Length: 128
Image (cartoon, rainbow, N blue to C red):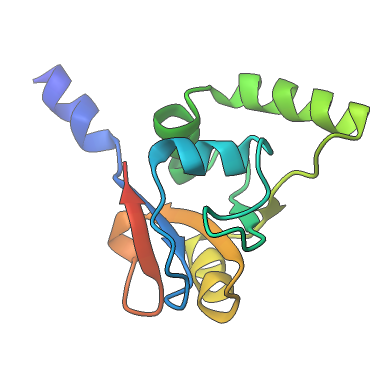
């Protein structure tokens, strides 16, 4: 029963891009974007990453499932990149609706939201 409840607590995360974006992305592509190892989609077009506030359930799931880190590791990773001038973190949006609206209006944006919030205004490139 406990394992059943634990599975129910985890939401499926949808990684989204603008519908005009023709790129298909692997988990590794998405992770590389969010770790600033690349700043462009596979096609070479610049990518602008969007994030959710620390502690948000969707963010915790995304970091765990896609980036293979926990929030403390992600914070430390970005602290090092910022300190050394090697990266600029993703723009933090208020909630899923803000991420979805921004992605729908910007062809260079990539974000993640609870999969249940995805609709035709955005293109889902991965579910985790």
